[in-house]
Length: 551
Image (cartoon, rainbow, N blue to C red):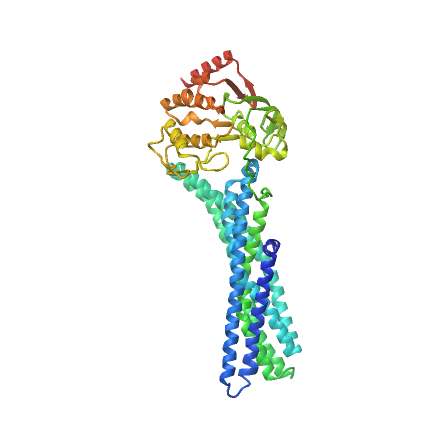
């Protein structure tokens, strides 16, 4: 199983110790059975010494069995903890394009459902290991007592195993189906949460979505999980029935064919009945382990970045002086090349301290350009140069450290940190909170904002605060001023941008505010994926067109 393979690869020594403890626990368990048979049952009047020996044996059994289970639980939960941390680091290091293709619903399903399934699988793993080890040790003991009865027992248990193996195949199939419908349900959950306002305004639309999307997925999930549980229940009951039948079969063959004495047959019955509960518990744990195995494969299918460590901090980061794009193109995936939207080829340059505006209609490629420029999307052709030096494939994570950004779909974190991830001095934060007119709304302690639940415009001001505090050479702003009131929009263009320019920060802003084009050093227009710089006359012409469109 992938579960055990990954555990062995990551923590082989700890797993080896746990298996040894499980074997020791099984051997002590058999010693208790043998002690009962040869010291207690054979003795007419057991002496106090014998009882003290029996008590000591039980204490040893309790100690070793508990030690084995606790060790395996700790090992399992440590593995899950490390796996969870590894996945998050890999997710952060994975290219944005690949993350977008995976989809947030599938990622959330894996990070919640799959991690939880792996955790539950490890909780039940001790039961499986103990049951298997105890059964093997018990069978060796039974072979020592009587080979004929052992042969019958082995054949019966082998038949049970073969039937159980075929049932496990069916259980695995249905659990895989369950996991696929889990992804669909998470997608439905996300749609209902994100679209809750639209559904609240149109109950009939909500009803139709429920009946056509959510209900079928939930029904298929129910059917598949029911079938998996049905096969599992049958497997458990079948194993229980065959084990009880084995007790009667051993007595019958021992006494009818004189294959063994009554005492030996009784010992067989005692051992088989003793291992019955651990064996049944082990069988009952198989569905959770199968689910965990499916989840491990599901996590691997995400194909996240192999790198499980963060990009090392660059204390001596290259000073931003200029950047340029030369014949850069990017093409979205589509069913056919004719329908695929391509951005580029783009030729663009920016110098330190410049204020650059990017204008263009919806769907023209402005946001894609900002992702290409910042290194979040890797160009399919062309070159990006930093300080006249081409950026190589292995240098993209370091190149991205030149940028901070407020994208249209930004997320506002409470932490305020500089370019090295360290907390910013309180006086610097207070200064910019005053500039952004947010000091009366929000406070901060040790680099953490007191709250982030504000209006969209106020949240964008705090996002700009976070971007400025990172002290990067270039700030990207995607329609930042669109959610500001007219008064503060003027403050942004006439006061904040000049302050950033004075500090040597390059600001590249996607905007439609034609009224403030004169605040920019250069204006570029994106049209159908092509970028071109506008002259002063072209800027005035676009201002006229935009003014007429909004009037």
